[in-house]
Image (cartoon, rainbow, N blue to C red; front, top):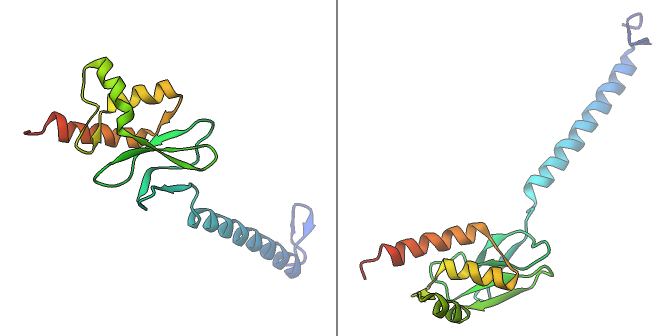
Length: 148
């Protein structure tokens, strides 16, 4: 094997071992880094004061993100602030908007999504899109298609 050449460099058993060892170390390092990346949470998770996870996962960029609890009954909405604090937004804040538009601010434990959208826009908040879709779905099921 010492007489063979690859790229102008004679191949010896030691040079092949060195190349394979270097390659394997690189691969182990890359696989370890990928494992660490996949096994570590890549997004922040938030909870309410009641200890329920919030639907929004991640870090707000420059403005608060409006979200809801990942729970069957909502008593308020939540703001995840850019500094990592979590604030509450009571359904009562929707009353003025509801009066302006002549609609209900909330029914049972579901806020009116159209009013939530307007409130967020007026206050300069963003709405977590998954939270909003869940809110719209719950409004559709519990208000639009309810028998009551």
